[in-house]
Image 1 (spheres, rainbow over the protein chains, first blue to last red):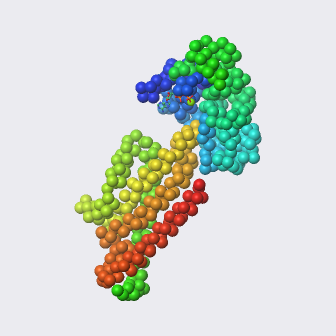
Image 2: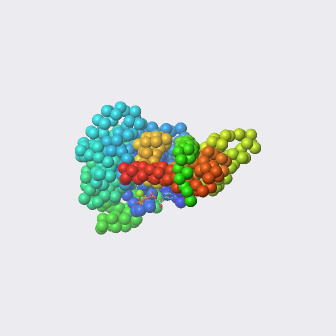
Image 3: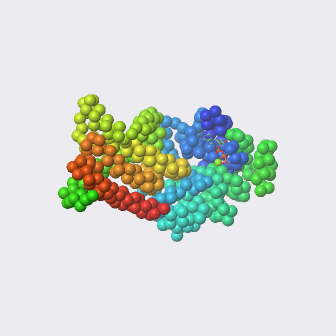
Amino acid sequence: MIAFEQVNKFYGDFHVLKDINLTIQDGEVVVVIGPSGSGKSTLLRCINGLETTSDGVLKVKNIQVNEKKTDINKLRRNIGMVFQHFNLYPHKTVLENITLAPINVLKQSAEEAKKTAMYYLEKVGIPDKASSFPSQLSGGQQQRVAIARGLAMKPEIMLFDEPTSALDPEMVGEVLDVMKALAKEGMTMVVVTHEMGFAKEVGDRIVFMDQGRILEEEMPVEFFENPKEERAKVFLSRILNH
Amino acid sequence: MDFSGAFTSDNLLFLLEGFYVTLKVAFISIVFSFIIGGLVGTLRFAKIPLLSKVLAVIVELVRNLPLLLIILFTYFALPELGINLSITVSAIVALTIFESAMLAEIVRGGLNSIPKGQMEAARSSGLSYVQALRLIILPQALRRMVPNLVSQFISLLKDTSLAVVIALPELLHNAKIIQAQHPSYVIPIFLIISLMYFVVNYALSLVAKRLELKHA
Ligand SMILES: Nc1ncnc2c1ncn2[C@@H]1O[C@H](COP(=O)(O)OP(=O)(O)OP(=O)(O)O)[C@@H](O)[C@H]1O
Ligand SMILES: [Mg+2]
């Protein structure tokens, strides 16, 4: 469903992604880990075309992302994205945040969009916040709204870029719980995170990146118990001893 | 000195007529420059390859010229190019050119002040660039721009007095006519026109404060 073939990316002279080959199947949960600056966000953002690739082929649902002919807006309907800093629209209520794209992109009626929005708000556990503004919510609640906003487009793929990194520790759990439920329902997920518990529990595969390269691609059990790459070992010891 | 003659209803009416012209010219210029400046600022923000660069050059050029020069240009130089404008239209065109450039920068700055994540979230959800601008970025940016926009409008209202050089019958012009006939009225006339400018501009800035509080 998502396929990188020999993908490279440069920022000017800087080589951010190096020879990326990665295939992600429908329903898979892939957790991307690696040190800061290793290119995790860039990899994720290439999938929905927020970043362009420099060469190689990247296909999502068999459609080449970086092609002139590709209708990127149409492709993005199928790919939800959740950001580290939530990026909710501050001038819109929670409900409006969630219904905006369904109404304007999918041309749903306001009622239909509202029904869907309430369904997902229910699902992330904060239906009572529908008419609040984002600034009135806690970080954990904001991130759950952001997830509901992504889900309301009924995407086949969800991308998460460090969804819990900006949260106070006591709010991490509530967001991870929503993500775990989603994973268990069979959503295709690509998750950049430092939450190793989450990776072990619901990850189908761990992708370890360093300096723009994918160094290891393993089942979680295998990766955590028996990392092969020296740099993966160092990274794990650092993050697990925290 | 005897000022009493300065406050006759004839004089006041004449000044009010001038102030009406000031307000009219300022208002029309504001409407046009809001449209043009908004469009130019947005196009510059959108970084459209050639167009944004060209607009940047024009905006910088205009912003670095004295408004007085632009007023003189539209009235005295354009006819040489075969474009004859009435005094009022000259003044409106000059003010619009200048204020559009000023507003374009305010609009561009306002758009740039919205965090990148807003555009990314909007585009990720499948909105087109124009939809994202219209629904997500512009509404937020406009709220932040209100104080700057209003103070620019106040400047424009004051700057309208520069059109006195092409004899636009605005407030300052009419005041000068009265003074020419009655040199001793200088001070009262100045007081009256100052009061007129002050009342309107101060009211505008109060409105701006209200709007700011509402959005804070
Ligand atoms: N727009 C850009 N222009 C130039 N360099 C960039 C740009 N965006 C990212 N980079 C660089 O590319 C590298 C990879 O960035 P990326 O954000 O993908 O890393 P990351 O693995 O997500 O790191 P983190 O864990 O800190 O989020 C970094 O060295 C970063 O400085
Ligand atoms: Mg990152």
